[in-house]
Length: 308
Image 1 (cartoon, rainbow, N blue to C red):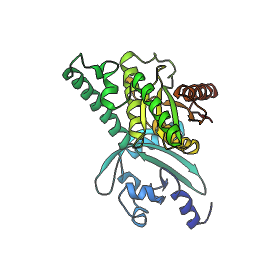
Image 2 (image 1 turned 60 degrees about the vertical axis):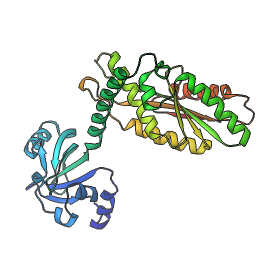
Image 3 (image 1 turned 180 degrees about the horizontal axis):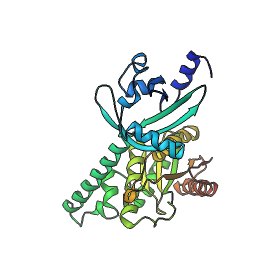
Image 4 (image 1 turned 120 degrees about the vertical axis):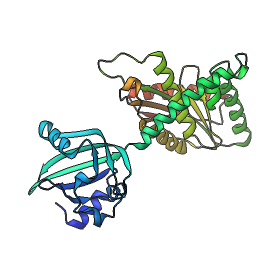
């Protein structure tokens, strides 16, 4: 074990909340700053507190019984309550480690944001349905996909037109122009049926929505004819485009998709390229994008490939 100060520095770098409790009386022996913040007590006051005070669902006794049966509790859904009475959903993990004496290691992450995002997307779907009913069926802007019309995603035809405009602008002013082509899919769950039509549509809307939300002012998001999404990045070099792709992949990968109550992961492959001075039109950029995405998908899940 490192000395006490360096041990505190070490656990403070953990991205999740971390608590060590004496297994004899289940009082907090050590904790990182994130646990202190989320439980609403300064670290000095949190030490010595009974851990059971903060655990609402399931009870600490139930967690300990689970540990006795299976040695490790991992990503268990539950609820914690802070010292100020704020209760919040969490994913928690726990295990008893035998050092000089048995010690309970308890970690958790606040799951409020994920639940809020799920609720917002549900409300968004309901709003889309209402707007569909209100919009006239003959509206030309709604012809390809009403969801894209509402969320701001360009149709395949609009994307092709705008790409030509952006390439012409880049050629005229010698500005950098980059593009991403994004393919996202639900990682299959063993022994479960493939996604139905409703869940496929919901997943498509979710990915489109997150891409639009992750774009910067001036970026354009459009739907390509092969079902992928394309993001046009004005005034962006290849190096900066890679940074944008990594942030987008992290955003999409951190979102949990729940079709029919099942927790599904999202796999995202991204191909990226930039406009060349020698390009005569947007099609040459698109060819490189498609080649980069094809290589990314062949490489494996959650892969980014750039072709200069």
